[in-house]
Image (cartoon, rainbow, N blue to C red; front, side, top):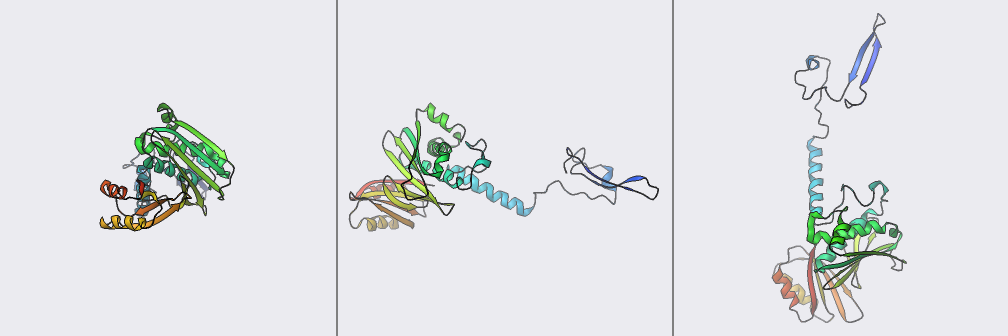
Length: 296
């Protein structure tokens, strides 16, 4: 019980019907540290450290949580415990939180793939998630801008920073014809290209990228990603695998999307860092149209 609150007193009457103090509970001393307080000399006084959370177990959990959040923040994908969010945390329904995280990841991914001078960031929503399109837009802008501006961008200043750099921020609610309960799309336009990435949530919290520039995919937005676009001809997957194997790069997952125009897009998740030399070798393949690398 804190000193600023009411202390707990229990009074009883002795044999002479006089009121005496039976118990006294308080959280802190008048002055701390209290090393010369006379109460400390009494046998019927119990004093404990004012460090309720300072146990080995709690400190370990705090350290792990802090490390995880620091890593997510460094990757531009974190928002837990952030101040001044664009929506009050107590107003966020549980089903919305994974979409906020996913939208920021998609923005961060789009900025790594489509490098250049940002022209516009557009968020498109389908389904019930559309009610929160303004908050989703803020998270998308944070994800995009963090790729180049790092920690100087946050949920409060992101849209102002974008405006200063003459980046147009747009959003749009569309009828839900995707086949998913909810779907979000982030469209990033730069002076070089336009990329459009769509995602959804399965089973309440399973995040998935389901579309990149019209290619249907099913990709977990996590880890080291090589995006390889090519003409859809025999032997390409084998050639890509040989180059990665030559450099001791292990493939953790391989997802392929194909269109009706004879093109394919592979999203290759790898366990190891990919150097510029490896990307150049992949790009030199005859069937290659483009290759990019991103980390989430």
